[in-house]
Image 1 (tube, rainbow over the protein chains, first blue to last red):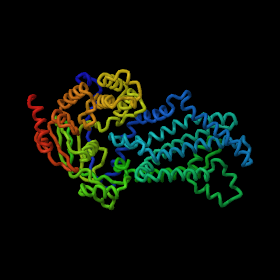
Image 2 (cartoon, chains in turn purple, orange):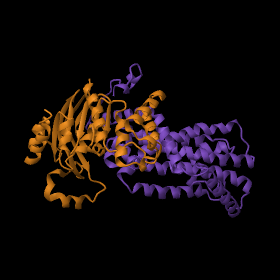
Image 3 (tube, each protein chain N blue to C red):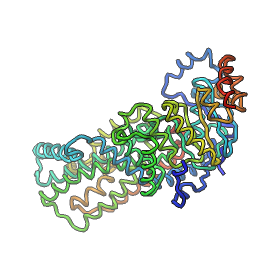
Image 4 (cartoon, each protein chain N blue to C red):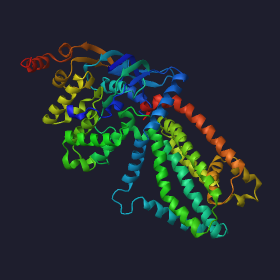
Length: 293
Length: 260
């Protein structure tokens, strides 16, 4: 044992005085304090979160020759097949339709799995939650990061399509970056909220799954908003659809469409609303999650 | 200086995902007092009731009690995993809890990868992680097995790995559940030596177990938990005298007399 902690190492950092106190629920001030501590301590574990998400991907494809690039291939095949079929059905030019569909589908799949996997972020980490005191933020960020790694593989398809179909890129395409940062933030907060609710009510993940299915069809992903021009009533479908605003702030810059201020404002207000609701919900449920999973 | 204080802790466990009513009916006969309803009239089980004790450096506390008496719940509460329904918990010192063998480990990853994960969890810098790896490798004596997935390990090997990882950087407060007993005799001796030197440097151990001989050997204070309440609290032998059947107690005393 004596050789375990050699003198003069920076074990002091590890051994720094660590005070911990936890009292029964005492109302909102304490709830928000504990939630803030959770978020702060969780961020410090970025190294762990990265290792956990990376190992999720690595394990999913362990033993496979090309590993996660199966993601790239299957997405490519799916989009290639759909593009020609739907371009014919919708009577649109495949040269404009395919880039739109490729970017839309890949980004939508990312958003949708952020939400659906966000539902199970605490349920699937039950042994970690019940085994150690660990900030719950870790599990939410882990899911977001895991899906972002998946997206990174699919981005190859986007790049290929944009180059092959010669979609004009300019400095304005970089506007997708702040939009994507917003997505990451939204992803973490929706996981914190839905993860907690779904740990308590196990039917919610199924409901969310069904809801996302409907959202896929009512959001301009397979079809373009311009096709609704003959149906003014249907335009409400887009104007009241939060997913449309969120999707646009990343999709449009990539397709060379300038961002409209209504898209930016819409996406920001939706995110602010989500973050506020999520913070309140997380503060309320945080202490109960260990009992629920 | 490490300390650990539990003040008047109660934990009500919600019975959400079970058929609470029929479960309630099924056990109503024998344990009715522990099943109740919370403020919003949801069914709950009172896992712990008004637990208070205080530990300081050098204390080695044993927890004993029948299955379902609340030992593991108490360990989880002391770890800060469950927020008490009533009362409060306060501690000073780095705490590590060994509640179940595979805890915090990913069974699909190799032993070595799990060591890295633990290092990241502890927030260690790179050189410290390598020291952790070397120490665990040396202590757990898993040899080539360290590089194959943990799910291929025997239960005793998982215990070796988990114990080695938990104690490589000696925590100031160590909480252990009884599964540690899955180790073989030579490992147990090693584990005991490690815990002893840890406790010697004025640290705290809390160990839940069913084995009277282990508890008598490892601890210097014993709490008997029954139905979520403290039934007895004192020196191990005094509590065993009340807890164990007469002939088991006599046997325990015989086993320990020669050593004293």
